[in-house]
Length: 412
Image (cartoon, rainbow, N blue to C red; front, side, top):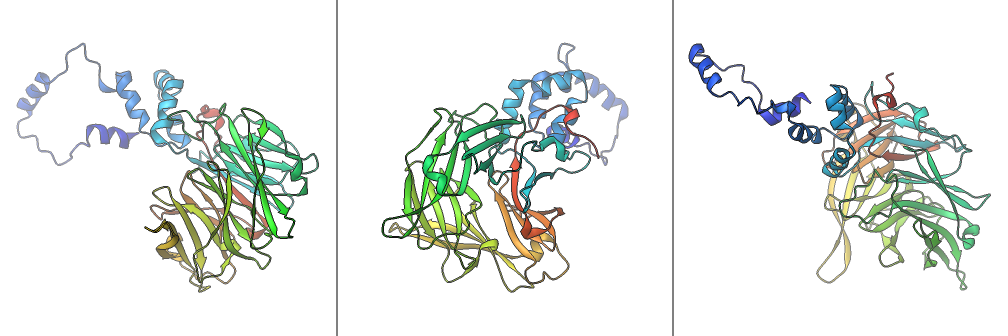
C-alpha cells in the first residue's frame, strides 16, 4: 500500500534543501486546501482508486480492510469488488490441488507465509474420485460406479452432480470444466453463480476398427448434453490428462502406447468439431515433458523439455497459419531449465518434467529433484513451491478471487 501511495503522490526527496524555511512555511500556508476539501485518503472516491490498484492476491485487500472500519467498508463493498476483479482481469493463483496414486486429494497454498490458505479450507469431505480438471474456480471429478460427474466450487464448497451421457459407459478418457458466462466484462475466477460447461471425452471404435474418440458437452443452464462429436485417431491413446483452454477450444496432449506424444486433440466449442493437430516436427516428445500452452497474444502454443539430460532445455513454440492457410509451428524461445529456476546443480536424468500449465497465471509448473517449481512465462521469474514425489501425483492449479474475511486466512 505504501508503494501504491508513493506511486500516486510521489516519493519524498531526502536530498531536498530548505534554503528559506520561513519562506517555505509561508508558501505551504498559501497552498493549503480550502477547509471544505478533505485530505486525499478521506476522499472515498480517491481511496477506491488506490485500493483498486492493490495486487489481486488475498493478503493485500485483506490488509487494507484492517486499517479501519471505513477502509473495511470500502474494501468489502460488492460494487468495489466487482470493479477490482474487472480491473485485474486474471484471478490470482491460490494454490495447487494434487492427487496421489490412491486418489487422495490435497490442497497446497502457493501464497507466501503467513497468509497461506490452510489445506483444510479446501478439503474434500466426500470419497476420493478421479480428478479430471480444474478451471475458472471449479474442479471436475468423475465417479465411474454411478456414471456421473461432479463439479465442485472450493470457495463455496458447493457440489453439482451431473449424470453422464449413456454412451460414455465405455470409459471416460478426459474432461474439462469451463465457465459459460457470456456477460460483457465477466471475469473468470469469480463464477459462483455463473453457468458452466463440461466437456467429456471417451474412447470409441468405428465400424472399420479404427481408433477414435467422441466428445459431448453438458450445459448447466439447460441440464442437457449435446450430440456426440467424433473423430478418428492415428492410434488408440492411453492417456489424455491435462487440458488447456485457448481461444474457444479445449486442447489435450495425446499419448501413444510407446509413452510418446505425437499429437494434440482439439475440441472447437464454436464449430463443435474434434481434430488432431500435429506437434512440432522432427522431434519425438516424451509425454511427461510436453504441454499445450497459450501464447502471449492468446494463440495456440506448445512447450517442451528436451535433452541433454544434465542440461535440459525449455522450448516454447507458437502455432502460425501462413498466407496459404497452412498451419505450422515456429520456435520462439529456448532457455536452459537451470537458468529459469536459478539452480546451481546439474539436473540428473529422469529428474525433471513438466507437470502442468495454467492459462490464468500464464505459468508452467516443473518437477525437478523432488520439488515443484512455478515459472511465469512472460517474465521467466520462478518460485520454488513444495516438495513432491513427482510421478506419483497429478497437479491442478487453482486460480480464483478470494476475498473472504481475515479469519479465512490462518497464520502458520
